[in-house]
Length: 510
Image (cartoon, rainbow, N blue to C red):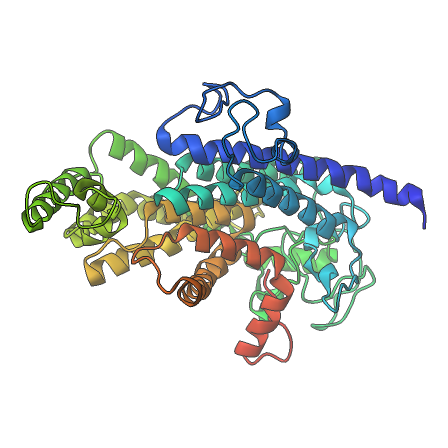
């Protein structure tokens, strides 16, 4: 074994894993402090029982808890095992992703599992160079790893409080914009406009001289980006529906084929870019109108209704008591606490959900309107010109953000109208919008529908192990787990889709 090669990836792997553990430690702070309205920096970390400020060595991720034996150094009170487990989980996610994308060989097989297939296309394909070139593809890795970290934080808070911190969704969206757009600018600056002949383009399923599956990799932009871009794939690969294999950046295609594909797809690409960016502009306009009071905020009277519902429940509990000073209806819980412990059920019981959906539809109005205007204007003004790569990628991020969020929002509106109960929360909308911005709209949609299966498995296991489940379950954790599974189990998911759709092989997702 070449120990120099081992060292070359072992040190970066250890560094990324340590960063993951540190991010996990930060997420513990986020999950504890944000629901309480506390700052993330001040006050400094302290034991919740004795109040003693913790030292640097006490805050070392995972190792600090182990060295203390799971107890406070000063008062010896127990420290929840949740803290090191979260740090370890994020460390494994970061280190595991790095290993799968840059270290594990493409054909690696562990205990019969082809783990090498998990590698994302962008970590393998050119033009960025040889397999494992982390120096050129690190923005995409940061995007995926950062999204996973945000999903862990959202899961922790949603599972405890039935709320998702908007700040975490904003961080994920910011990562999607910065990483994808920044890399696109770099590619455009240093690689120029694609168009060189890297291999032959033949029938679907054949392989060109450059090693790429010919015919299926033809994209009008010349590159196969890490997320689906507006207007792609187009008619050249229409026989495969969403036909480009993998999620990486492919070599430039033959110049004449590239020119023909661009000319045919330019109007559609511009229309989708205009629709996506116009929709994002609509989001900003709708929020401005909301802040100005020109659009009514949905569920604005919920707190008032909840207070009256709690007061009524307390009155009923007091009336049901056999005598003054009798024990509460549930041992150990006072009537007021008993009602407060059922807040998720109160959300479900809110009787005006249909009315509130009208307000949310009004919020969506400017988004739809400006999206349509953007599609018409860009298609009319740009003629047959092809968009620059950075703008094309920006449109892809915006499209993922809008479609990811809209998928959940439409289900929320439809379910609330159908049952007159709030179906899903707005936090779920923001969560999937963030997923779409980082992974693209297709992964976001697949993850959303896959979350139903994750939730079903959870309910079955809960009933089998505990005998019952809560009436109201936070959906954010199911969405988060489903998203991670879509990324890590993609090859097997494509095989399953191929079987379900009657395809002779895996159904390739872009």
